[in-house]
Amino acid sequence: MTTFKKCRKTAILLTLLGTMTSLNTNGQQHYHSDKLIPVADLGKRRAIGVSVSSDNRLFVSFPNQGKDHLYGLTEIVKGQPLPFPDEAWNAHSGDSATRFVNVQDLSVDAEDNLWVLDSKPAPKGSIFGGPNGTATPAEGAFKLLKINLATNHVERVYTFDDLDKSTAGLNDMRIDTDKDLAYLSDPGRAAIVVLDLRSGTTRTVLQGHAYTTADPDIVLTYDGKEMRDRSGNPFRSNVNGIALTRDNRYFYFKPINKLNLYRIETQYLANASLTDTELASHVEDMGETTVTHGLIADDKGNIYLTSSMDYSIKYLSPDGTLHTLVQDSRLLWPDSFGIGSDGYLYFSCAQLQRDPQWNDGVDKVEYPYQIYKVKLP
Image: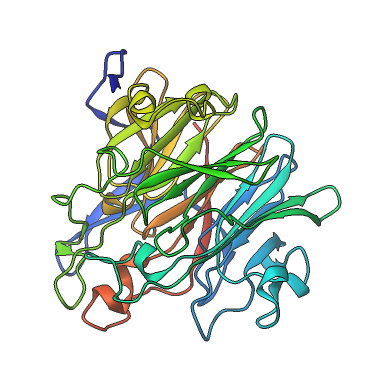
């Protein structure tokens, strides 16, 4: 593993003025920034995936989490989530091959196609526990859809037929249009999955390496309370958030429970002749960042990171400096990003740390769920 060559600045810079801090009634720090702009009120429906097209169409996805679930994939039109690409794909019953089961991630590629990861992992591949696993492994259900935004039609569906669905937990994906490859994070197996978009076959790489595996010593903590279930098991996720630079050259990745950010040139990910040891030698350590859930790259080479434990969005600039873009107490588990040509960064807030699972059975979610945006630097 090689290290980042540039001089790493350790100071975190607050780059947007107007953030106000105060103490709430419990003596906890409270942040507010006028730079944070609400975009869509989602009521009690938790959004995860967010992506934006070149003409600023905003797409938002929702995991299937019970009684309040309405649509798996939506386009936000005048602040309202409308089913996309149609009602049929958002049906609650029927053939799972032609409807959404549990939409996890969205990404608009360089050619303005919307890619949709419909990913229902097996229990063993879940990111939501400490000692993950079940006595009887169950199969996950994964498919990746390519939707042409010029026609709003599904052009192709990939079903990962060669993937071990009893242990995989596909989470985020990015599309390399130069090489016809998709790169997916798999926290269930602590690995990266490389999907050949021509043949539909996959390769699993960097499985179980230090930079794809969660650090057991990092326990997520919010307002002084550790994120643990009733049995005392901490939340833990292996490689999760990923980003692909706009020129398709670098692939960035990191586990949630890890501070360091890593990258590798995609030419090496695309080279199927490399052994895992050879591939690992090309990974670059970008230095310490923060606990993050989602990543995205802009056209200036900045890498944006959600930073939930201090309620902020940060970005790593090309010179190696970690900046704070916005900090606000409404940023409860900021999750997935989209970048518009209008100069704004769009993102969801999943509030996962407020679920009953992590609060002794008490639901502490603050409704409504929201989509926000903030001006890019």
